[in-house]
Length: 218
Image 1 (cartoon, rainbow, N blue to C red):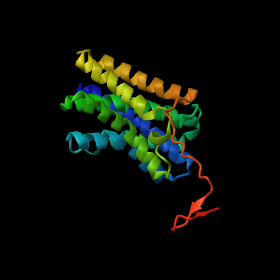
Image 2 (image 1 turned 60 degrees about the horizontal axis):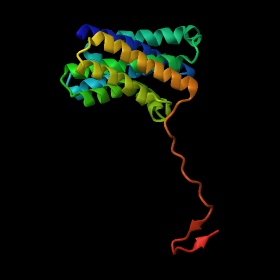
Image 3 (image 1 turned 180 degrees about the vertical axis):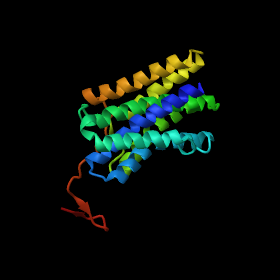
Image 4 (image 1 turned 135 degrees about the vertical axis):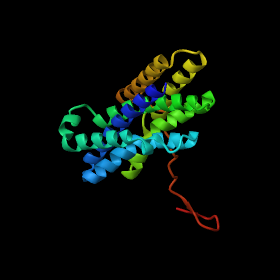
């Protein structure tokens, strides 16, 4: 199980780091800025997860492989961006892949540390959305999780598959793969078909203002 979690974490770190680096290149950041954004996007969700479950120091800090994978993704994207950009909507594709991998790995690690199923699923969702959220904050964007089509819901669905599989004593590898595929598929379908949750639509003002003495001003 720990080997599976490590592989999922490193692959998720790599694809999320590419999404962060791709966003940095499109915003014309320099090499240092690109590497910072690739590390943050690839590791912030996992660091948050480890701190919440008491796995300290977080794996992303004490294991050099996380830093190496993040920097590798940043360098590849910075110098060979044209190759990455050949993919359709590369930021969204890599973001969806990272979301799926981190959602299931975060849930599995939470279960290993003894969290109850509901909290394990929520922590898996947080692991998935954390890196992309911090990436968007550093780029002064509204975080994708607050405005994207079925972003957090897709992560929660993947995490729920892992939790249900654990309750039914299904092998962890099978539920992890199914959960990741479900999350990834839901995210891509939401992007291509425009699926989304209801959006807040504030009522328009009537054009009238009220003075302090409650007299209406046209």
